[in-house]
Length: 291
Ligand SMILES: [Zn+2]
Image (cartoon, rainbow, N blue to C red; front, side, top):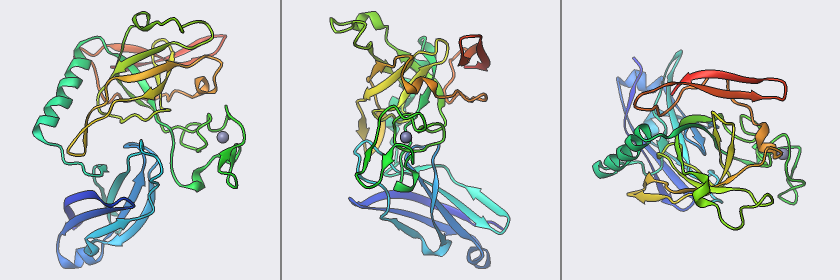
């Protein structure tokens, strides 16, 4: 029998140490025959790398090696109990993730608004992040700790390798992009890019530098900033998100669109939506997804 984990939690102990705790449940011989794999990532969905394998009986693991240099970065953990050929993966864990009733109501209200009020399906590309070993070898100089040139075609200027050109596998969700003309300012000329703002849910959690691609038009936006509202360490809103339009000549425009997509948030009356996969000069390619 595969032992189970109860009371799983992750909390910041000191500024440089995160404690992951659990209570293992099961017959003693099964507990002794099992190990716990601990993986860490800097987004909820992708980029997980193994940090340790420990006995279930150790009950805690203290992570002092997570990257803690950027204030926008959150740390996520994924726990897997392994016994021989059997294994069970537990839900991704975020530090201090204890969501109270009122917070859940607020999150639900935002998602309901998005599902009913003309939000459009968008792909969210989250910037890759991680240890030095995952830096881009083409543009990153490990000695000076700087990129040798910008607009690198391997990492799209993020300086990390990532899953798709410096970013993680994109997440398909609903985003309410505010109409651009209302935000036009005197600076909105051909030289300076459009800016706008949008509303979206709490998942995925955005950082400046992440990208949003409107799936029907192919227009791309760069996340300039978000307004994180955190209650009891849990994100309840990140609205408004301030965006800057990306020019078609920028390297981010070449990021691929996956050919299979599962939306994390669907419209209340979901419709079959054409999603632009490839916008080459000869012919545009679309896939169809119900969002
Ligand atoms: Zn690079």
